[in-house]
Image (cartoon, rainbow, N blue to C red; front, side):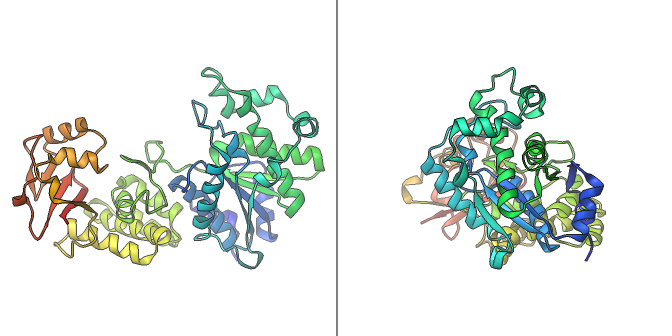
Length: 406
């Protein structure tokens, strides 16, 4: 079997390593137990987490054993990495609910059967710690000078770093130590913004156990301009269909920039790299075929084949030759909405954020009803707009909704 290290390099995952050549050799000849941590800051994972799960899935497919660590304990503090402000404090009840939701999502991508993967929650060992014992046993091995030089802390020094958050690195390092003792876990994988925290764990194991441990980071999901991908007008691109519908999810990938198609195919699908390169090399109008493949493959993995087919069918109905419109996202209204302004309705239903956004869209000729440009910001919804109890709203070039009269 080919070395997973080479696969990850070819597909563009790997960013930083503690011991590059040594890790490549180990991954080629041994079955390694590794872990990736996920803090349950919401009741759903988003597409930024998805790249980490793909990272994990590739490792598992090549015979290595993943530990998916849900941070029920570290979420009580909050990771300062990549943030300019302090995270909102969550209750134990909220965290427990989020952990349960995230576990269900992980099981779609990682095979936890027959010991092939392990699911752990660091609340099991962090919440019962005696602080004095912890600081004596673990804190003694951390240099404050080195911690303050870490990127995750440097970016917070001007705006203010709480002592609460300063503990986060110790706790993440301790997680690695616990998993090393409990399961023989020798590698930590994670996003590149976790580099400082990961090195802390490697160093802690070396000092406490006199053992070699390793860490490597995955590139963050960014576009060709270096900006994070996965943000929509409504916020994050969630994996939960209640937060981001399969149609919205599909459309996001269908509309990515041409320059990002090959990278997304390599990182977020299991398509062979020869096919990824072929699709990525398409130009002009043909690149749209690659985007359709990308959108379908990712939606199928997250939401299943049936939902992916529905989203594909809806997109083809809107942009193609007018096929079945039943899968286009619907806004259902009652008779009492007749006379309401179209912009008011779209804001109330959460399709637009504000009336100001609607005003700008009308001024820019970007809002249409039944393929007619809306000229009047206050245009009311009338019965004449409906055909078979529905009419079509188009926002910009690529967002469509059908308004259905119940």
